[in-house]
Length: 285
Image 1 (cartoon, helix red, strand yellow):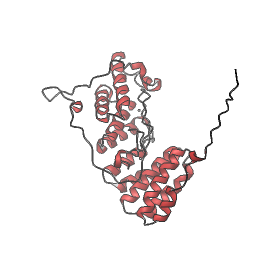
Image 2 (image 1 turned 135 degrees about the vertical axis):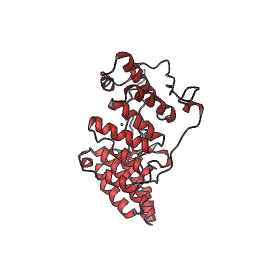
Image 3 (image 1 turned 45 degrees about the vertical axis):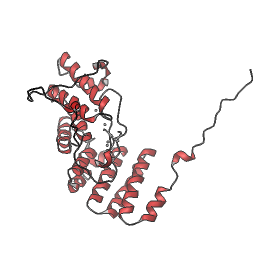
Image 4 (image 1 turned 45 degrees about the horizontal axis):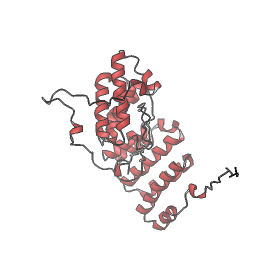
């Protein structure tokens, strides 16, 4: 299952989930995000907020005795084949029936992650109970926990994924979880991890957004400004540039540099310079 207010205002760093449903949260907002994972989510520099929980009937996950976890219902139209092929291949260690059941829960988790993250979380947990040693299953659990504000749980799951497959792609989300747990120093340490230097430009932007937010959490707006400006060279898309600009505006305001923040906010977007020509000419019949 790929991450920016990171926990605040419901946004997340961008990372689209490999859920196979193709209903990816690009945008990742990555709180950071996402998401998105959980919409896409985007990570900005706002401070963290507390964990969110749903108390509604769809959040129920136990039988009438209150003991045994009960898997949430799967939509009738969901098939195991809806899951991305490369993700399905990671389920080959399971029996066919079990793999199909896990795949369908993963599809449901991806389908619901944006609109009903609490139920997506329940589907991810159902998949974990059936295939807890598969990295993509634990990744789904991590993303769903992150999107529902269960930051301690999400951090544990992301660490498990890292142990299982050796990937560092979730460093920004892990750091954002530390922000959500009100531990900005640990968040900064993760963004400065040696492994972070080897990540691609997109993830460098995600790391910078989380780091900038952590600097603001610590009351260091000038450091946040330097971090975000330093990441501008990695911004390859208009979305990344816009997110960095948004974070930079927050940092400038926090530093008392309102004029610079206003100037940044009034800068025209790239899209405003695009002129569309209709090349189809009308010819009389």
